[in-house]
Amino acid sequence: MVKKEMIAMLLAGGQGSRLGVFTSKVAKPAVSFGSKYRIIDFPLSNCINSGVDTVGVLTQYQPLRLNTHIGIGIPWDLDRNIGGVTVLPPYEKSANSEWYTGTANAIYQNMDYMESFNPEYVLILSGDHIYKMDYEVMLDFHKQNGAEVTIAVMPVPMEEAKRFGIMITDKDRKIVDFEEKPENPRSNLASMGIYIFNWKTLKDALLTNAEQPGLDFGKHLIPYCHAKGAPLYAYEFNGYWKDVGTLNSYWEANMELIDLVPEFNLYEEYWKIYTKSEILPPQYLSNDSVVERSIIGEGSEIYGKVYNSVIGCGVTIGADTVVRDSIIMNETKVGSNCELYKSIIAENVMIEDNVKLGVGEEVENETDPHIYNHGIVAVGEKSVIPQGVSVGKNSVIFGVTSAEDYKDGSLPSGKTLIKAGDK
Image 1 (cartoon, helix red, strand yellow):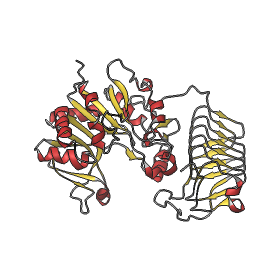
Image 2: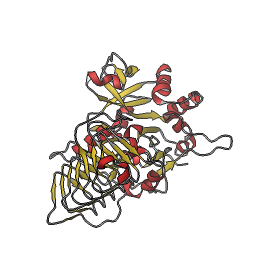
Image 3: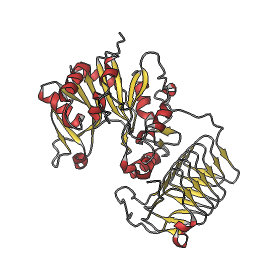
Image 4: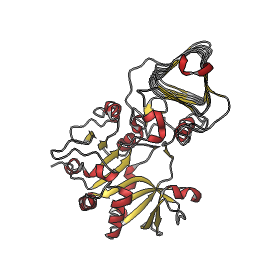
């Protein structure tokens, strides 16, 4: 029988609906980040850098790109005969096929997978945060305190604490109480959704609570362990951690990568971020091009001017085009003489010549103001924007659009243009 000290279960099933059109055809963990990476590369790289070589990735929503990206785990050195990385979609059972209904239900449906490694500890991770963390240090803390459950927490400003699950601890960091999004928080230690369980404790909690609808760690398992008197501890993390769950936080996290001294450094030797890389030629910058404070992915051709932007791989930016404060994902083509300001452009988009994005005054988005805001222009994947049109702020375009879709050649600020078939 195989025995692993600690295995990781990475929850990557989320739709990430607050990312709007960027997750309408792709699971949030598979969304591009920082030019050549995808969001899931960060927790996977943390695993291999922390010596955790067995990772189950639980997928559900639009899993194809995620599965293709992970493959057999070669980029993360997770292609192993024993352990390695395994993609775990919900599967058909003989009685009834069951989707994962809650974070802990997804783990419960994969009991056999975990059992096969007979682990002492199980690390639970989510696939949609950008951070670097040594899980081994957290495991040491877990062992030293004789904990049965350790929850990674991060100090947040007191006024923001009501947005999180908050842990209340004693002086030894033992958890005495916890509150989900409290109106009047008694502590500022926010749960990061990263847990280490003793396998025996996790197994008991899952089997006992299996029938709970929408079985969830925060709502069911942790309260159950606490009520049973299992020692719960809070492990404080003080590094860089970003939830890229909204378009604005996603845009900000990308922009922070191009700071002169980035708070989050993608290029540290001792803590590499691994990804699946296509074999691409180097970047090409023409004599007339200008690039300032930007990341340009491999295989991209720049004929225009790029300022403060993150450009993916295989992107073309035409002559006399100016791109500012924008994110352009892989394989997108931008024509000549365009102006792009504070735009997030998904993969495989075609922007024809003389297009202006992000012009005019800011107006609230007409359909989803909670998603499309902060003046950002969002363009979903495989969209086409015809030549000569101008597009306002807080707007969203998704689909193959034509000149007829733009009254008087423009899409005013705050408008949503989603073509049928791309919903």
